[in-house]
Amino acid sequence: MSKRKKGFRFAIRGRHFTLGFPFLWLTLFFALPFAIVLKISFSTAAIAIPPYEPTFTYADQLLNVALNLGNYLLLLDDALYYTAYLGSLKMALVATLGCLLLGYPMAYAIARAPAKMQTVLLLLIMLPSWTSFLIRVYAWMGLLADTGLINNVLMWLGVINEPLKIMNTDIAVYIGLIYAYLPFMVLPLYANLVKMDMSLLEAAADLGSRSINTFWNITLPLSKGGVIAGSMLVFIPSVGEFVIPELLGGPDSLMIGKVLWQEFFNNRDWPVASALAIVMLGLLIIPITLFHHYQARDLEKEA
Image (cartoon, rainbow, N blue to C red):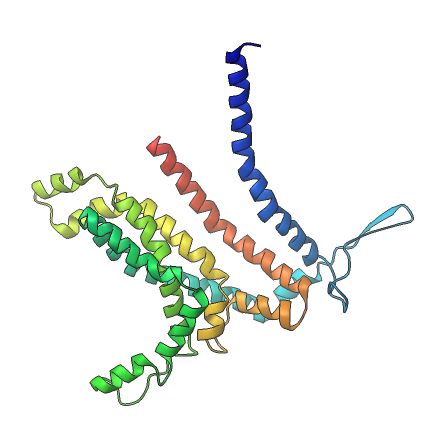
């Protein structure tokens, strides 16, 4: 066999290995766990280890399949669950909007800063993420408490006469979500804005376009990809967030991650908890599909 054919075969095998690795990763860390959770969601809760009855049994050369649809029907019957779903979607949407309103000016300012400063500013955005997420949320508990730093400063300045009730409210959850996921909005926006063709802005300025008009008609449409990517990166994890509503929210801050935890660990009802997780994933398929669609379209444009 010639060296050329050997090299060609080696290149083909290398390409198959490269392409096969992501599929292997996806199978091991998504498809397989998803299949296990899906199977549990159709089982019946039991006082045993694990706390559910087997879905598939084999005896006397007969394979028996017992699918319990009651777990999914319970989600429709009990108002607690769809209230939790709606609460999660509402909080995730508000948090995404808040991150966008705060993150866009920050990303724009970083993208227009001198090149040396951009690295420093990006580092300042990322630096808090290098510490434990739990510790940062605990720090917010100290800031937002009735006797916390924010209330003490406002009372010292004479802005308020008595402490504001922030902790254990939805406001505290929104603050925590926006703080935690703001870097996920800033980074894709910055990556989009820094690549923008500045000659378009210069041409608009030469033609007498006002700054707000240039931003609305040129900058914002061209940064649409970054807005969509950042919004999806904030919205998707916010829906299933558990730590922030548990530590900063109150009894009325009902999110699906909190309910899911209670079903898994407090009630030990793994089948219902699995059904909750499957439905939550189904709800997230829409934004994930949109995200994939816009990413694929952007890649086609760049090609």
